[in-house]
Length: 210
Ligand code: ADP
Ligand code: 5GP
Image (cartoon, rainbow, N blue to C red; front, side):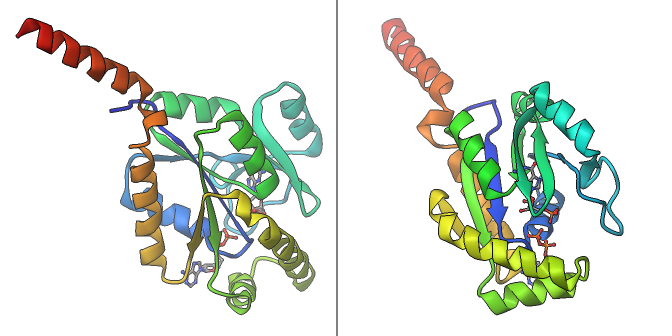
């Protein structure tokens, strides 16, 4: 089957549980590589440069953007966020499935550049749960939580652009569901063009040799 990894885009409202889902996926399965984005936002408590994000200044970010070192970028609630290109291409070539945990504007740009990318949108069971998760995380002020909920309401209007909507209610179920979707995507014929050709040739040669 195919040796090139596939690109998986995971978006979802802030607080839906994207970060939590990623951690579990990486812990349980070994074929996933999580892209580390560059951002101009300040690190949260416990976040380290080069682990959750590359924390950069606005000038550094604009330089990366201008030198075309980003697959995509977007502005989200007053900060820039972008996906460094080199890591994504290298890991896919190594056969890893690369996960981009990014917001919707950037996700749509990725889909334009990589039409075979698997597009997943993570949601909470309901709005109240979302607010409770954001408040419970304790990493943002009430004002920022308000901005993020507003942004989530806008994003709710746009989630029809995604192929799959995943409800993060029970975490374990959600992790298994996402893993199965990615594994199924490997069977798509568009991810197996080289293998299909090889098999066709092999069948022909085999019959001729009989
Ligand atoms: P995101 O990365 O989408 O902004 P997080 O992964 O930071 O969201 O999750 C937001 C909060 O919700 C965290 O405190 C996390 O522990 C909690 N959380 C995530 N998934 C679940 C779940 N399935 N059930 C209960 N709490 C969850
Ligand atoms: P947070 O500040 O909560 O870490 O992230 C805010 C939003 O930015 C989330 O929706 C997250 O998915 C998104 N994001 C993180 N990295 C990137 C990126 O590289 N590109 C884009 N377009 N969005 C990103």
